[in-house]
Image 1: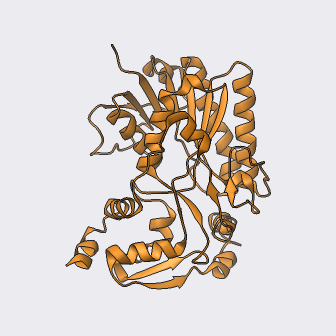
Image 2: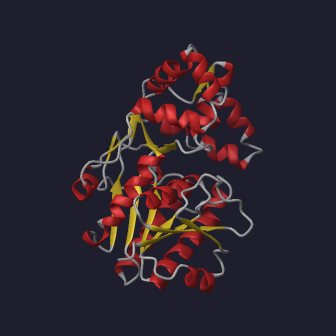
Length: 324
């Protein structure tokens, strides 16, 4: 009996790479799409088949992915600006949905909490109404509504798994870009108050969740949204956890006022400042529906997830010194 086949779009990215690894480890045949000329990870699972196919070459990519029953949309805009989101997010999703429909496959994609807006409540379930009051929130809500309409009108079954901020499986998150960017110098940067609970997703766990949900996809309706709880942590939890593995650390507050001034000239910084509220509003994701579908959510204990995430970032020397 042949193993099921999954197509990962954007498999060279952090989430795409983690998803490719998780599906391969679970015995799936993994077709990993990357842009032509993009360097592929050297330590990837040997069962992953790399497809250097341009997303816009729809027919060629469809032929190369023949037999895929699940398409994981792991593509991101090239920049974090509002303009890039408005322009690229709908286009990338349209490519993914059209490809899934042509293959007769289920479409799966990660979601975020942006759609709940800047006044998001402390507990977030799939039934919490969206309150999109900034650009990225409006883009995200419109995207999910479009995919829902398409799925309910004969398009591909679509599953959105919503999660908090990513960490682990490499660089490009708040952990390495802000919190621990000066870890080697014994310093942490805190983007908000130390006592506010914040939703985090350890990427290997999140990727395993996609596999588990994919295996149960026939039990879901044409369009489904599920919540991945992950780790709900305060910045104080991060300080204590990082000090436990790296020794004494100094802390400093993130220079939001300066970034807001610089944002007048930098669309990226301006977009970043627009998400400051996530560090000021406590929030946690309710995963009851996910657990009802797959049982226990994949969950690496916090100390282990933190240590592995730091090792993935190349912090082994400092960690070893701390334990010496």
